[in-house]
Image 1 (cartoon, helix red, strand yellow):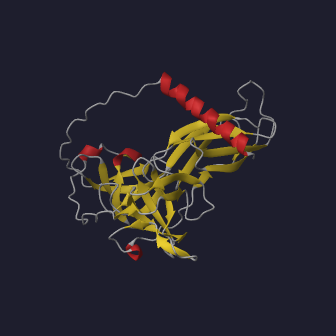
Image 2 (cartoon, one colour; image 1 turned 60 degrees about the horizontal axis):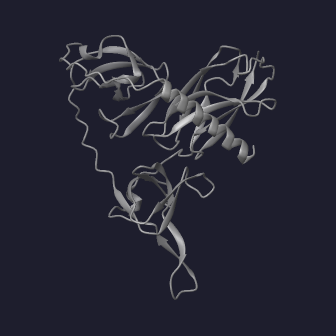
Image 3 (tube, helix red, strand yellow; image 1 turned 30 degrees about the horizontal axis):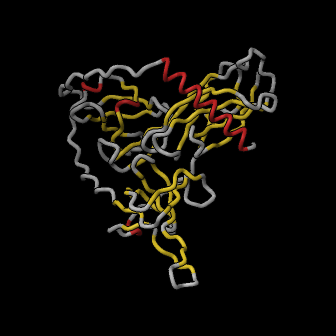
Length: 314
């Protein structure tokens, strides 16, 4: 796919989002009633989103224990005081905490007993400061990944993880989001004809103490890649840049410009789930007759774009 085509597709996605934003304003916030301490010690629930993180404590700053998928059953054993997080036990006996927002419970969350977490307070995230004049932040741990942003000297960073060889570091930069940067770059110092490897940032933390971040490349998966008209399709987005608008564009060889079929926004972990029902017509009213379609999923700023094949069964 030529770069001009990609730009056109993403520009179309931006336009659709802008129109949607103008048509539908944000809902007015509603203050939640204070939760009362419940009396139920156990209940059941299922996951109501594509993939849900199970953590060691009631908050996104706690470590992820495992991830569970849509429809996974669990036992509810308690909640936090505000009833926003629920303590659970999985069928394999793994225990942890999940956000109450993403489960379908058999009882009101407020009816569960308040459980005091015995999990240790998470250690502060190590921080760093960029020491080189310019530093490229990329979507994955390598120079072949898409460029997300160019960071300047003295940019503050949060250190989130590293590759096994510590050559690349996963960071979060304010007003930019998450990405990967090289731990060292080669420069030619004054008075020295040979290039020298220098650290790209300054920190009091030991690089080896950072967790190894596995499976960090951006990924898109479809709940079903062979669909009939009106069939539901879930698009799961993982390891994308955090807090970015994303869109899915349906195309074919006969309709290369395609149209935006789903939009959304990644969360702080670079995760999002989009949904659409497979249409049987293009926007101009022409029937979809091709069996081999393509689904382009990416960020609206062009930082990440992933193509997936989609077979239309008619």
